[in-house]
Image (cartoon, rainbow, N blue to C red):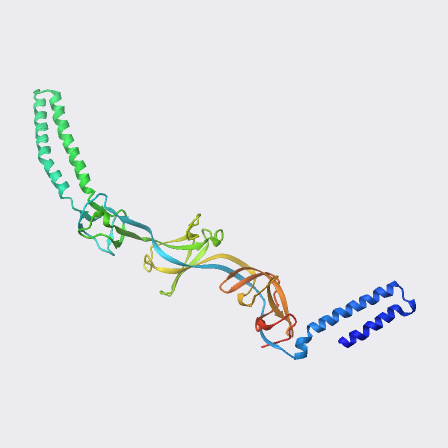
Length: 361
């Protein structure tokens, strides 16, 4: 081919200069012909490497088709109680009784443990004789008043004395009740942090309302705006070989400054299979394209000018620049560059160049 090129150039030059009989139009035409020849020679030389060597690359292809593309976000999640409360002492003292244990069901208002209240109890008992005396004096004063004996001031004074002592006892009793550690909600004892002999400030008793469970997960801030309340989700429990279909019920509006993540939640209600602190996989379906071109992520090659893949007509490979969208589970959505029916090379593309000879396996 190169010999042809060198023979043609002198001929073209002689033709363009022969006897001055050619006009400028002929010269321009000849130049166009020479440019066309140059382009053809360059094209042949570009494909001559494989042609001369006889190299043919074995490939596998996949026909490009439109399909539904679902985008998912997968993240580790944990089951927690929607109501988790720590029952603590309301005053200082020493624990002298614990009435519950881990795993026990309790109801709201139930006494879980008590502190040593001997001093308070003695104070209350010491008031009983005073109250009894004041009551007797008041009742006698009432009888005298009915007989028009004594003054109204004496009657009111006896009544006031009696009522004040009753109020003082009520206050003392309320103070004594502070020595009781009360369940603020109904639920299950999840953690026992107190034992007999401990100081009340040493720990607490944790109660979980298992009738109100939720799944919680943290998502990186790059997902802000990509997840919203109502998005379909699936909770996958590999150890149970089970899953639960649900919807996102809460998306935090704030990003944690330390973890750079935000919280999402799914309220589950009561489920006998689930228990607080169980781990699972949260799979959020946050995107769908019903008519997408989807290809494996593995066939995409990065170049200085962007992303590309190879397609074939059955004999040669052709590089095609593509624009991609979302990806999920090893698949990526192609926004431009490919059409339904294209033969996408999915194996053997690693050693290909544009125009390489190929053979479909």
